[in-house]
Image 1 (cartoon, rainbow, N blue to C red):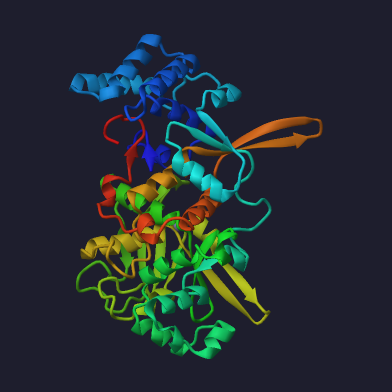
Image 2 (cartoon, protein in one colour; image 1 turned 60 degrees about the vertical axis):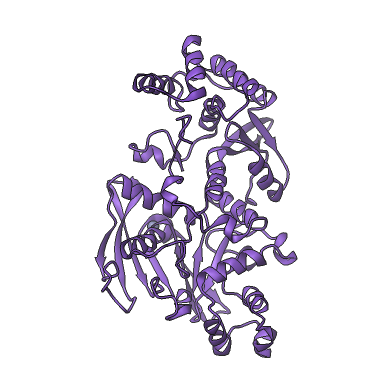
Length: 448
Ligand SMILES: [Zn+2]
């Protein structure tokens, strides 16, 4: 997560509009990591597109090169950056075709797999404008999601792959292989061989690289509860939760347990009902907290007990997003099954429990919110701060160009395209503390 000022909570959590992305990219281009010719081009463009004096842009260019060396220089740099911050009134409007010619904006019109490559190879001093909507328009990727657009973490494809990897494929019952519905025998086998959440995730990311999934758009991860309910995860929340968790801890927004006793070493053995108050990212109507209720969380500190508890977990949050994603699915007209989502706030609760109990979230085999690596965090940041859709809208004779940031669904789809290329270890389970790389100052030159 990148921000110009983390003290401003609302701004820190508000997505950037495409013209703001270009502004940030232009300033980014002065940083020392870019080669000199390119830095000079960006200096010229900053002079062209802002009302800031040339002298000040030159000073910014100079100090950015080494970073501020004295306190006085740091103060000066701060005011220079303030001139060109993305909310500054000193910006002029952009000539987009010209910025494309200058190479600041990169047009892209291929498929999503190619877009992932483009994002990976593009530095933060560019904006990528995709010439079509990234998610197929008119398709429901949020509530009533087609089964082909889901990756089921405990579905038959993952279970069979896990059994193959463990050399226990011949112990899977015929009926399961035929009807593809796990039964008690299958669950016993999975339990015996340590099919934890982490193992399921690693296996699922492997399965996503097989022919069957390569051509599919994956919009969500699902966990099938043996009672028929569905529990969904969106891997972008696996980034947003630790970001919010780190933010809450650094900026004095406590996560409060309201019901249950999960935070003390002698707390509940039975991981039943718990309710937590979690700070909102952006306060709504003066509401600054959300309430998260959980049932059947795995015993994070003791993975050998109830290994499959993660398949029974239920989380409910009272934020608009979670309530919107909760729905009732009718299957074959017989029974309504409930779909619930493990979203950002529920993820924060899981991380808080790990933190309070001193359990290493990185090594906890049933951590439902595995921590992102710096590389994965950087990839998602580029989706949020460097990627926009640029779409031509025809209205009778006239055409208008509409530019918008890539929304959550598009980001989710692209993360899943990344999972078709990267291993689980490249995406999750970093070997350094996440707090040191999750919150990145947007403009400060040397610290990142
Ligand atoms: Zn929520």
